[in-house]
Image (cartoon, helix red, strand yellow):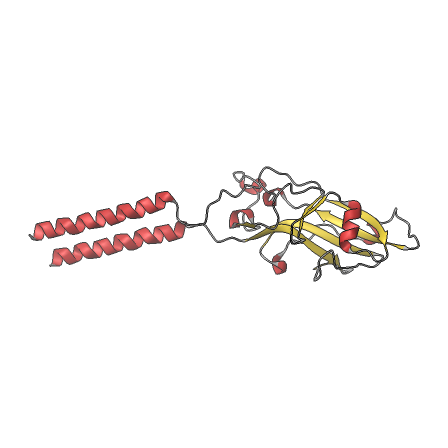
Length: 227
């Protein structure tokens, strides 16, 4: 009986170790979404816009910004990396009756947040001179075509970037949690989704099956010796 109990305990320990190994190797849950975030400049810094670009109607002298990145949510979204100085951006655009000037900041993000096989364009700014009732979306369209929207009117691409995708969910390796390609020297920027559903790999499952087989063999040997 002692031998059988010892064998059973050994089997239990092996099974627990095997399943813990599987759980420890399961990839982290998705860390966020890859999308264009929309910002307003307050005069002292950037604030995440509470209205979409098609709804928000900036005044003459305002600055709006767009940043492409992987973000967990609006509270952790990456801001445009430009100061958003209206006087500097629109210095060469004189005021005109019946129109307004809106400074537009475009930040295409970093290589590690780019979709697979794509490289972000350089950051840029532009001064949009549009009608007095124009929205931020109208100002963007005046200086940054082509734009791409999805069927839900979500802004997907500015100046054709990115070429595909729209607000897709990505894992931790493609979020701001991972080291940059320059820092690690081993990471590939903008790796595309390989279709993994986040579950254990086939190799891990085979390993657990092997643990179960070994445990069963141990029990059989113990019973044989007892007999």
